[in-house]
Image (cartoon, rainbow, N blue to C red; front, side, top):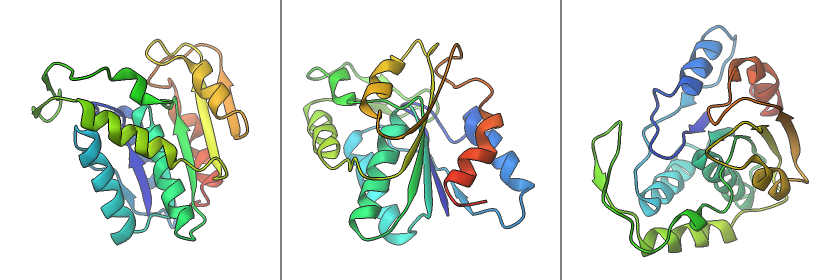
Length: 191
């Protein structure tokens, strides 16, 4: 099973997930793809991932933006339980706890309509998760330096010991993502 974790306030209808589904549809022996709506709060997201890891046991994980951070967490948790699973991070968030400063205003999720507020508990969860990130897991990090939402240099520096591709230009969505699917899925050992 291939687990895809989308970014903050995104959805399973994101262009990258649609491209991935389309690509897998035409691959013989393609893995099952799980790309569900993630909860808005950090505690609920961690609980969702922990439950999924114990019940479904993915063989590979991909994620973009904040989903890249969660991908590193998922792969770290799987490694800690003795499973060798790789991850692909696409323009990943690094140290997302820095985005939160106390209680933030109430937000409405653009895809689910859920109203929620991030606060100190979410900061605590992100701090705990960050401490559990294993630097020895095997990751492929895809970065575009034209990302206006996240500074690619933070991920470049944080993941300097991992396999990495940095492209000039592009944006936060990682333009023309589909061209990397064959090599990313081969790296994940699912093709």
